[in-house]
Image 1 (cartoon, rainbow, N blue to C red):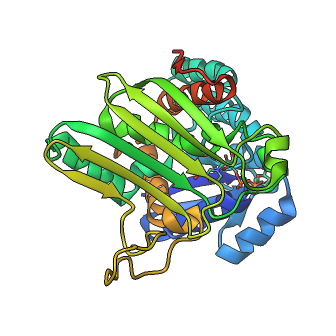
Image 2 (cartoon, helix red, strand yellow):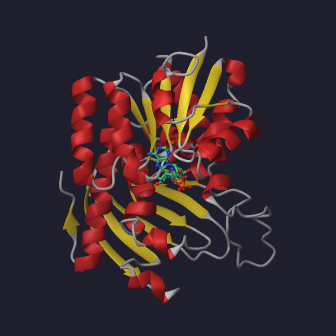
Length: 338
Ligand SMILES: NC(=O)c1ccc[n+]([C@@H]2O[C@H](COP(=O)([O-])OP(=O)(O)OC[C@H]3O[C@@H](n4cnc5c(N)ncnc54)[C@H](O)[C@@H]3O)[C@@H](O)[C@H]2O)c1
């Protein structure tokens, strides 16, 4: 079966998705790419051996040559997510879109409404749902292998901060980074986070504080059944890119991300674990998850699987991030508004 996939935006994450889709050529995936910067699209197409459309309009209509794509992957900057999701929905084309759905939760609501009214298929790029460790942990939890959970700890720590210009528009550490943790906590436990209490600090570059963000933060998150989780994030984890999720239950404990690439060293004499090289970036840490989400999207387009990340669930994680940001700013515990 041949499936044409149109990919819009070949920046940092778009090029990676393009490579993963092009690797599915043997499975019948035909990739065509477009970018506002047409020369960049042509260059990437030449590098990876796919087709470039002259612009986004041509990618949607199929001109010149070929019909409309069977699915589109939206990997542009956040400001253009909502208009492109709507365009795909109105054209009846299934879409994969990088997180977040829109620039704010409020801006995402009309998108959810339109997607629901048009009955369109939209998969959001919260890739941890396809990470092998997260899938194993969810399986164990669903089978009851861990008993009942007493504590959950989620960690997302980057080695170095992104440019301050990006941080000024990112919505803050919780919306930019921890939204992945809030989503995976809700997806894994099948429960919603109802309240958060957050604190943050700024001990790195003062410019981060000057644009209204923090470089490190922790949120205490309470689930529907009262279980507590901590969600911590930092921009300054010099030891490596560290994403872990520890699930402690009455009958067992599992930790996602605890392998030989774990970015830490044991203080105990004689302990050799971990022995590998720590990941440096999210690209390395989630290489398999990013590959799997493109495979999943192709299967979704072909009607071969369920949607691994519907937009309303991604927006729900954004609501938790909004509450965490509000708690950080006010110092008070904040109920998640739904
Ligand atoms: N899931 C994750 O782990 C993860 C990680 C990084 C980034 N992201 C998300 O991916 C998105 C893209 O991030 P990036 O770092 O690749 O950005 P980027 O700036 O490197 O690339 C964006 C590309 O899109 C193009 N573009 C922008 N608007 C366009 C439009 N309307 N039509 C066509 N092309 C357009 C730009 O020319 C550029 O080439 C962001 O929304 C970000 O939140 C997700």
